[in-house]
Length: 113
Image (cartoon, rainbow, N blue to C red; front, side):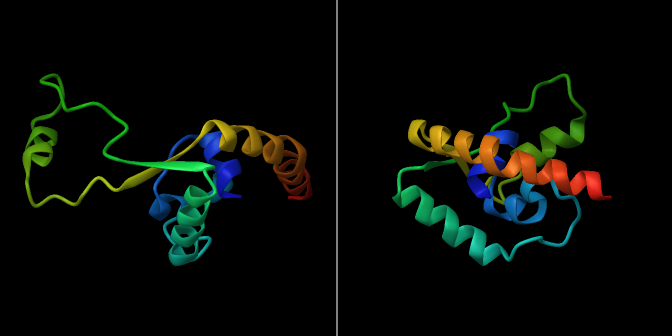
């Protein structure tokens, strides 16, 4: 499910993955965070995911609200986290999983509502 999520929605952190896995919404985790972190580490070892530290977005510019600049330059601010993205092999496997298993399952579940 993690590979399919990153294939569909792009790179994410384990904290966010636990809360919005495959399009889920809400504040409470859908899957326990520890399980997601362990699964991500295991997928990195299998060379299906790669990790990088930092923000996916660019730096704050002068055209945004002043409080964003203050937040950007605050040294006590929470770290940016570790984002996970698919490797070349991971993209191939995730594409197969998404197209042959997850997409059909989500379509069927939405039809039942």
